Image (cartoon, rainbow, N blue to C red; front, side):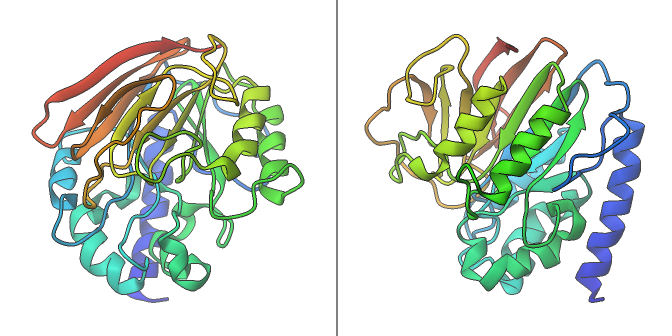
Length: 298
């Protein structure tokens, strides 16, 4: 093993111990775990951002903000610019966020796949990224089931990923569920909507999932709960975009339906997960709250 692989392996072991101690489970996938989950903790905190390691921009600042915040860290893809290479991870991601690797649950973005097979991504994170080459997995955080998905692999109804997702949702019915992947179905950013992720949303909606987190557009955006067709719905999924981890920022474009808040600022989405709902705050790098609110599970 290389030094980085050894470090990732050690981090995965340390993370497993930490998760067990705080009432959360380690990542599992692609086969749903057997034996049932441990009794859920009363609450859990997650932190999320994507589009991180572009040298010379904001990643060092968001890394310093993370130093002050406890919780499981969801890295929402495009973590090392521009090719997701070993050098990109070494020079642009690791100095900023590498010290938080033991609590990070990453998913890949399109830039990771500019290196064939996203090999440097899997080398860097090891087992924390789920099964090598797949990058989808699930774990328990407090009373919630959290599902990491890969928007750079096939997602259609008959794809291995979507079949696994259906199995996971059917086998681990908890009160609340959150999924996260890189490219959003809905976005007011310059990249716009990504309709090829529609089938992931359809499956999550069918099983009553509550929240989706994404990156890709380098901005913050919060949507009201909505259905697969982008229509407001009290039984729909609330989507957040937090592509604010450190890469050069984007300016929002034309506002999509049901978009409730947009910001072009570096920061971290902090969410507190409870048995019946969730609270959120979007914290800028100077620890200013730029957005906050709460929601209930279905």
